[in-house]
Image 1 (cartoon, one colour):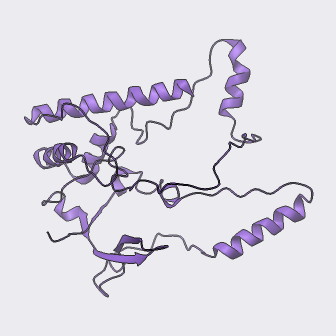
Image 2 (cartoon, helix red, strand yellow):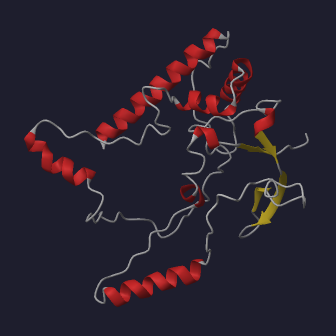
Image 3 (cartoon, helix red, strand yellow):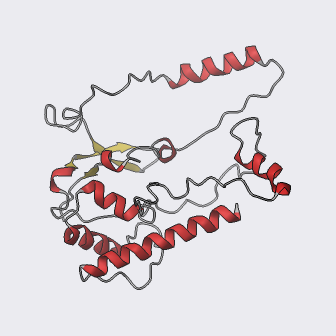
Length: 240
């Protein structure tokens, strides 16, 4: 794991250095130091840097996505953490390498977890700005940005969630202009699918403990727009 973390940091540093070098050709200086913001704060200097670079470079959205991801002809990987360790030359490490790279018959140890939170978790207004750049919409990628309507849905308690309403207005929404001809039909029935899967496992393995792996929304959509040619930008405009 240490090796993978070092590789990830090495790639991240290399991407940042290349991005700074490209920006310098347009006379754009990168922020001196990038410090992580917390709560609802946004790193405005970094947002201005990426926005200025997007405007000055004049690149189409797909090419700009490749630039900030560090995708090159020599290394086209969009996610630099998708790295597989090569088989080591030392025979003594082959068994450990095999266990690390295996894709089946592995039962990871379960880590402990807290059953509750005493304090409210921090706001997540900055989520994503350190893995993907935030841009100010000022005519950037004008033909490749979808301006959608802001919707508000209730959450537990007094919280609300702001979402992009892709189905409004009727006849002129994002959904109306989406080509669905090559999209597979998805049957969405979580309770029934989960119950059916548990039933099948219990019938097949009567004496085995059945575990359910839970995930969040960001994890479910992590694979979306991984291909630069199919990346799109969604935005909404807030007055004031």
